[in-house]
Amino acid sequence: MAVEAQTRKRGAGRWAFPAALAWSAGAALLAVAWAAEVLPHPFSRTDAVNIGAVLNAYDPSAGSAFVLALGLLGTVCGAVLVRAPSGVAGRAASVTALLAAGVIVLVPLQGALLTVLGYTPVVIVAGWALPGLPASYAEYVTSAENLFLMYCALGAVLWGVSGLVGLRLQRGACTACGRAEGRTREQEERVRAAALRTGRIAVALAVAASLAYPSIRIPWLFGYYPGMGTEEGFDADGGLLVVGMGLASGALVGAVLMLGLVQRWGVRFPRWMVGLAGRRVPVSLAVAPATLVALALVSLGKVVPAAWLTGRFFTEAAPGGGVNAVHEVAFASMLFWGVALAVATGAYWIRRRAECATCGEGFPESFR
Image (cartoon, one colour):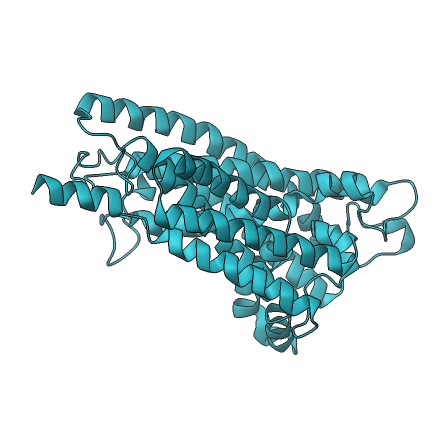
């Protein structure tokens, strides 16, 4: 039984290795297809640099070469993790996997991911009031640029999980929960208390950062357009106003939902949720969407450092930099928001860990 438990402990999560390997091989094939003009490449829109698409600032062949190199490196790294995840090679491959996840987030991922996520509820709720919006949204989502964007989001997750699982194997911890053997209840409670403290700080920072975008969109309701060049007669028409308010409302709703990462109602459903009141909130229900949103926020927030590197940001800005100053602050806040949300999500996951079904370590949740 002990051998069987140890096998399960070391085997959990290793599905990510072949999945990341397959993703990398697919990325390399995509790059070859773009170079051969078999498939449309996603690097043609030069204006996408304004939303953090770093590769779009250069010739499309540079983007194809980058993805090819990333795919080939990932294929080698994935093969090592699949065949020999232990030892020096496995340790190097695990670190490389985490670096690959970071590179994907910082380079090919860009702000359109947040646009897709932000516009989805707007289309669902207000699409009926704006003729042509659903069709335009469907066309936008299925473009080569955005399909590759979602492929990159998947790759970032797969490589992040692979690196994490690989490092857990190196230190002999459970690959499912990350715990070492023999952790006492006192140790577990100390870890949970530290996670709660960290989560509270991260959520406070995330909520503060999340208010920057609504602060430059909500004034539209009153005829004020911060950073939009009012001296040149900018005016938000009906459709633009609905979309702007929808995205601003989404940010405000997100600010409220983030509180659940450190509040009791993020662990047990609140009383007003008829049929669910008092029941345990599934950990994945909070962690999965929060992780995706954090990725999207960082992808858009990096537009400011990307602008410093490429020298391009809001090329339609009015002289004097007024538009730049306001929107640089708003977009930079998304970078801090995304990082803080990622930290808060990780802290929430650690705090919510109960007994591990794979290794048996851990204790029941304290529901704090």
